[in-house]
Length: 112
Image (cartoon, rainbow, N blue to C red; front, side, top):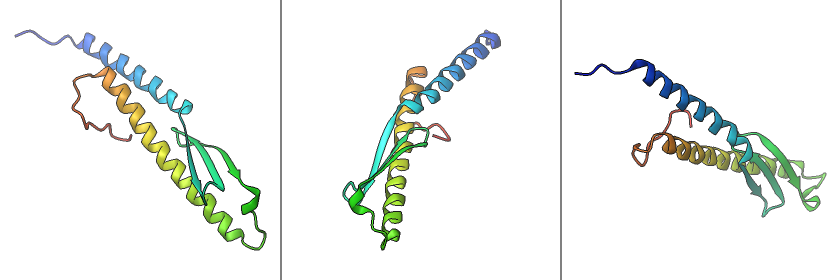
């Protein structure tokens, strides 16, 4: 029985780790949007779950109803973050699949 080459295995693990780090860096470039109030409030986030922009239609700004505006911002932000998480999962799964093509279809990487 042949002994496994631990040096080669370690090299493969290091390569895979470097590819995963690069895949995670790519999350910054993936942008998603969440909106509320029929598009009156739009939040843009990246797949790293960082909020990039918030756009508020001036029509929704009512000094007598700040609570509604706050609710719209929260709803749009939550939607954007949900989409960002889904985009991150999809991106990492795609990258993991290219590194390990024999993974089963619904394989999930913990933390993603």
